Picture (spheres, rainbow, N blue to C red):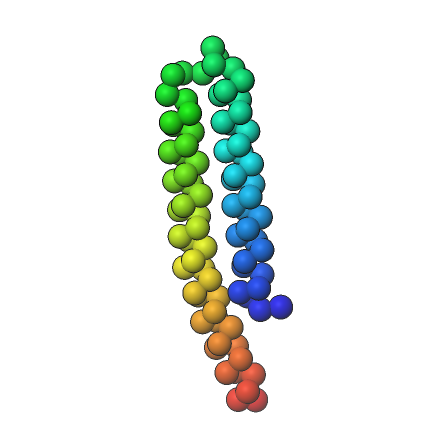
Length: 80
């Protein structure tokens, strides 16, 4: 299995886990308005959005690196 093929499902699983945490926190804030601050939803949205966006950016860079490594491995294989 290529590095790209392993990276994509891994990133999807991690992003889905972060989305689940975001969903849980958003529902917690709506269900318990007296237990959270007035800006809870905005803070959760900004924080989780930054986490997911940052991870997606890192995932893109890792994908490009994995593609390069796959090409190098294929070239090494054909040289033998």
